[in-house]
Length: 193
Ligand code: AKG
Image 1 (cartoon, rainbow, N blue to C red):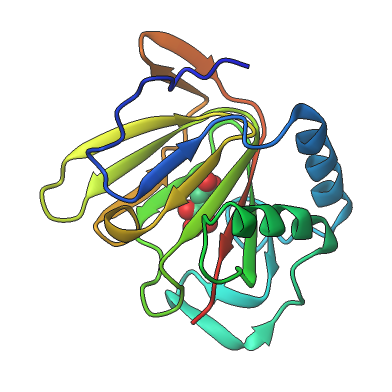
Image 2: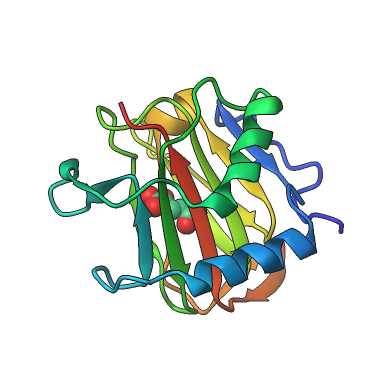
């Protein structure tokens, strides 16, 4: 499946990796089914699932007294693969599943620096969505359309020097095309430190 990001120059953001079609359509379908058969929480504006130590968005810290279970079985093949492909040094032990309905987003943020290790992964399922990156110092902005089945890897500058977020919109404009949003589910993996 061709990616709209073919040939896009990501070198403005060191440590940012975008891998289109990281998983197949069959794997995507299977992951969506697995996620939807687990229990969703409604403690944010959107539905979420937490595994490992819970991140408290209000306190902007990990809640070490709330361990919400090991990573699910269905995440194991994915973790094995990112490890085998040397995309990580230490296996992730925390997962946040976010569900975005059209119109929902997530405020720009830098993932908690003292809580999580240097590499963050986000696997996209379902809909496309435009992710905005803002340089913490220069305020430079870059936008990248995240496609279903793609993997986003943030480390180094991308992890610490740029914030990332998703505007709450029903469609995105990207490279002169309109991309209406449908339900998107993202799996964000991190290593707690
Ligand atoms: C977070 O949960 O902190 C995210 O940034 C999620 C990003 C995404 O949905 O791809």
